[in-house]
Image: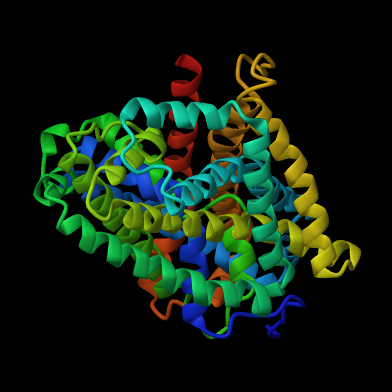
Length: 455
């Protein structure tokens, strides 16, 4: 097959793609959610089950997304439509691309609101406003932020502009340049914070919380949690990885690249846990605070520790960088499609899409204050969009991608694009993507939906 070139450009090398995809995968959930669910569900035993789930669900579906994107060299919407035509199937399969891109776009609209909270706390830490505050003051500060649409609007606007500025620059001058700066910065911040955590006085307790091998805590529910997180953590089902894959070099190995991304994503999450929980335990605080851990518990902990202002500032900067790299990948697929479909210049396409997302985000931030009484199926606008994307659109998109790669594309197409070099390895992927991954995602879909509706 003749090698195609993307009109958007291509990554300079394989490692840039790995860092960009890892940046897409590493987000707010990695910083607080994964460490917490690991500690609560058996520590080291949970990590082993999670890694097994990554191998059975995350990696095969990520390989499928990348191979579709790289083969067509277009945005997810056009990539699925074109590969379907190549396989002699209906162009309506392109709806899978639409579902993923739309899911990512909607996620960005409320993700930017949460990222705005992070920017607010970066400023608060940097100016010393969070030094020596107690739990009650920290809780009130967060409550005041949610009650202030003006404050949230300002930070939401800043974050959207930050993302638009990068995406407007294109693959090489935007995404690649940002990746070269932000991902090394993220790793450096992790290392610095880990060093601080080691000397916090609670490192042994934090290590035990995360890694003590407790099989008795590994219930069936814990396995389901591992299965669900193995899917969501790699940014699957939202068009981001497929779009990034379309900029990947033809000679680069998809298999080894995806495994590297999975390992880096998991390492970042675990190291983040080693940065956070020793500080929590050193201050006799509750590690089970969930999202409140980041915006209420940790500011108190940092505010009361030697050098806490500096390292608190670095921590929230780390979270901000993680949010930024993730959000860039949420806007990129839609921007690429607008450029392809309408011939619009990329800066204008990114700006137009950014304005629409900015307006959608206003609805989410108002749901915490002025629009708190407005409900969609008994949920606030923010919670409804979160429910719609996390429990319906993403699992459905992931399921359809697995079925598409396994049952719609021809084996010649997938074998040629993956170029695994070993028939047994390809046969294993082929079996997993056809049978194991769809069943696993269906379980995630049904269990999550049931839990949310029953709850």
